[in-house]
Image 1 (cartoon, rainbow, N blue to C red):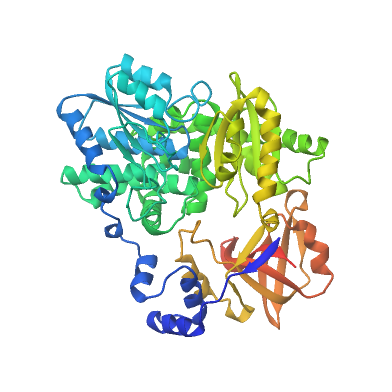
Image 2: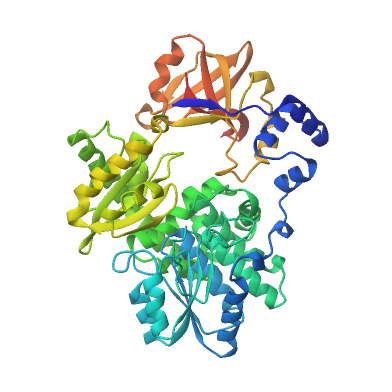
Length: 562
C-alpha cells in the first residue's frame, strides 16, 4: 500500500472555520478538505434539507418528459416502465411505477432478461410493448445509447422517454425526451445522479405538476439511497441530501420489501455501508441468478406476508450467487497463475461456462487481488460478454474506447463497464487492451493507495471526536470516512491473530504513554510478526466502535501498518 497524505489546508483558514463553528482545529481541517468553508456550508453538510434539492425542470427535456407522460395519462395510453436489471435499474422501476400507480392504473413494468436480452433497451422489450398495447416506454438507467432500438420503436408508433446517467455517445436516440445530466447540452447543476436519482427527478417534476411537495415523496427515498450506495456515485451535493434522508426512511419506516430483508439480518440501524453490502447484493441477486423482475416485485409489495415469501426467495438467490462467486473467482485466479500473467498491466480471463450473472463480482475480486484493470469474459449466445472493473484513478471506459475496433458494443463508467465482442476477437482484444492500458496508466496506480486525511497523536482521539466524525455520514465517494495516521506506536503485549485462518489482527496500542486503545486490522493477520517485534511502527486507521458484552468502546480500524 502507498500512503498519500492529503494537503493540509492553510492554518489561518483552519483557525477561521474552527472559530466560526466552535470546533477544534482537526474537525475544521477535515471539513475544509471536503470543500466546506463557512458556517452555512457546514450547516448544509451536517443537516442536509430536502429544500436543498434542485428544481427538476432545470434538467434538459424535463418539460417534454412531463408533457408526454401527462398526455399519455389524459388519453388513457398504456405506459411501460422499463429498467436495467441491476440495483439502480430495479429500484428506479419500482420508484417510478409505484408513484404513477398512485394516480393512474395503466402502468406496467419490464426488466430485460440478463441472459436472453442483455443490458439496456432490447428489441424483445419493444416487441413486448407492441404486442401488449403500450405506446409509451419510460426507460430508466439505460437508453441513452439505444439509437437503433428507439428508432425501431418509433416505427411501431411507440414513444420513448429516457432517464439515464451514463455518458452519451456522439449521437442521441430520437426519443421524445432524454433526461441525462451528463448530456453536454444539459445545464443541470449536479451531474452525478444515479439512474434512480434521475428517475426521482422525473417523479419530483410530475409531483409538482400534481400539486405535491417534496415532503410527499419522502417514502420513495429508501429506494434512491439504496441505488446511490450500490452504484458507487459520489455522496456529495444532491446525492448527499437524498442518501441522508433515504437512510432515515430505511431506519424508521422502510417499505415492506426492505423490512422483510432487514428482518432477516437482525440489524437495528443501517449505515450506507450496510445498504451497499447487505441490501444491495440481495436485490442484485435476483437479476444475476434468476430475473430482475423478482426484485421489482419485492420492492413494490405492500403486504408483509407476501414480502417475506419474496425476500426468502431472493435470499436463496443471494446464497447461490455467493457460492458461484467463490467458485469462479478461484478458477479465474488459477487461470491467471497458469498463464503466468501476474506481472501484466491487466487481467483478462475467459471461460465459456462461467455464470454471466456474477462475472462483475468476480472482476471486482480479481482487482482486489492483483490491483489492475480487469475483465472477466463468458459466453453469451454466439458472442462473448465481459464485465470490466478498474483501479482508482484509471478510466477503464476510455481504455475500452481505445479498443473499439475489437468490440461489438460497450457502455458504463470510469471504474465499471460491460462489453460484448465476437469470440474470434477475444485474443485481439486481450492484446489490444493490455497495450492501451500499458501505454496510458500511471504505474503508481497499480499499487493500492490509502489517502490519509491527517496525521494525529493518540491524545487527540476522544469520544467527542468520534461523535462529530459520525455526523459526517453518510460516507462514500467524495466524502469517505476520515483516515488518520499515527507514528511511533507499540502494542501493549496483547497482539494476536484472530478469526478463521487467523486472518485478522487484534491489537492494543499505545503512543508516548497514551492508551492503550484497542484496534482491529481485518486481513492483516500476516503483520503479527511486525507488531510483536517491539519496534515502533506507524498505522493508518479509521475511528470505530467496538461492542462487546454490552460495553461500547472506541477502537481503531487499522487499514495498514508500516
